[in-house]
Length: 345
Image 1 (cartoon, one colour):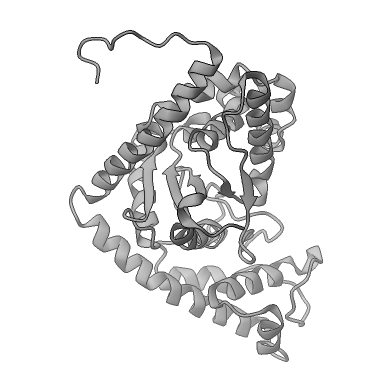
Image 2 (image 1 turned 45 degrees about the vertical axis):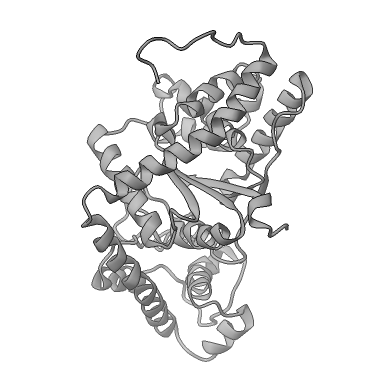
């Protein structure tokens, strides 16, 4: 992987649909902080994606600010990375429409996430946005000519669709888009639910002991971890055995937070019980989150700071995306306006 920061661009984002959890931190934020030192980094709060399901307007606004503040508290630096809200740049929606008109329906119906979510809803309640979600995601990525996209395994298919759409456009209209690659962290890429260790940890899950949220107080973290599902065995080892998923999940969280090698982590718990493992995970999580939570409180207490970060980020993002969108529209044959309408910037 090329580590020349300004030669390569990385882009990713998280939906403001609920509280961020330890899986978001380990699978996304932690590596984003590293990538901002290596690449031209763009990180957005993907609020347009958040409306593919019914939502509350007030919560959407509040969560957009909260997620941005957590980006900053986790170590993202607005001087090193472009941090912005997706909806603050209209180019995302415009490119998504242009790409939608080039996307075969069959490609979208094959998307696993669409099939899974649609299956849980009545057919008449599934909106078109849920089907078109991957095209909007493709627009997010292609708009900034991103080389790398750090996403979880559940989003890998969408990045593959992005590559297909970019290649389709390049073949039809000429070389325009950079085709992105997926990057994953070595550990912590897929943190599972504490109560359902065979299912990925989710912001939307309703189980009270399902997820460790980044703003959970220490006593709540302890309660959730100590009640985490394990099994009736004794061995504390990494395993692909579904019956050992709970122990494997706790080991994954511990390894990702402490940075140890697998063999060293297993040796640390040799001959010890599940209770010892859970206590060690509690300590690792609380030690990690304490400074993040303190920084979050400081950021949130500074009037207008988060809004200013988003405004500055949107301005920088627009400067990049405008060039891509203009090229796309030129290639597709759209007539450039002779002048702007009065009163329109």
